[in-house]
Length: 87
Image (cartoon, rainbow, N blue to C red; front, side, top):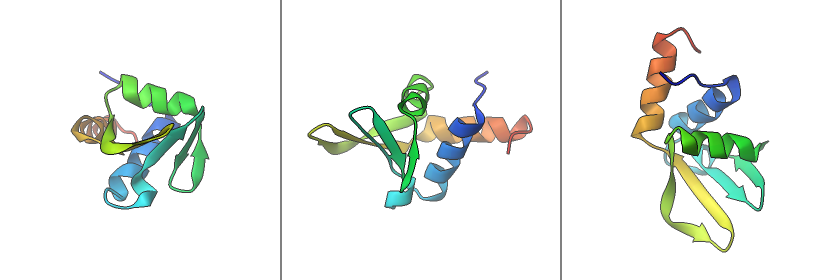
């Protein structure tokens, strides 16, 4: 069972609500990360990667910029979290 932090949950929810636009894209570059136009910590990116909840978009690693989208595992983690009483 994976337990998401509140911020991990918030980021995954944003990504799930905007699967096809920039608001749902997690961008990481040189130690800084953004979800849409909101800054988040690089730790969140690494944690979501460890949970296998996000995937690098094909062809979207340009220079040092990495772009991630929620994947099926991330959606499953959100559903599991909601069943256990998360938001």
